[in-house]
Image 1: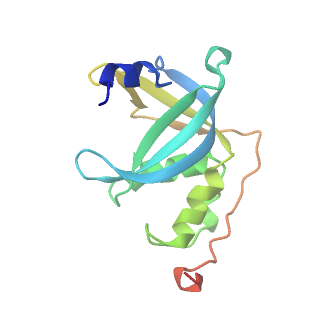
Image 2: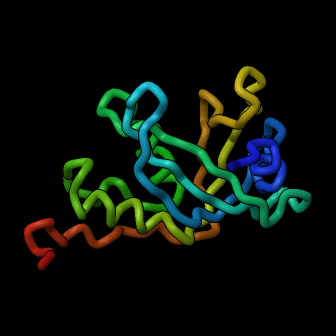
Length: 150
């Protein structure tokens, strides 16, 4: 048997106030929204403001051609030089390499408290800002799925 209320009360999930947070991207995975839209779920830890330092912050960007600008904006805000990247498919190893390049990078995320759902979401405008104190990088996207021995 499971106890739903104990499971929630024991989690470290927290809704943060509307603000801009300096974060370090700690990982990502592919997921789907409740509508079935493919998404990237981004994991991060807050670096600033100090009162939230070390806390986990998770956000999503859509993985559709129409809304891809949001994912591209986040990747660029992680210091990835988008001008140097070739065209690629969403489900390619090259695409995964670009997302992997964001892990360990710092960026600024502007989030708003979503009162309707009791969570946070990216603000609709200027959600991501580059941390100018880190160098721009160009990930190696030369690996191709056909190069994988598995």
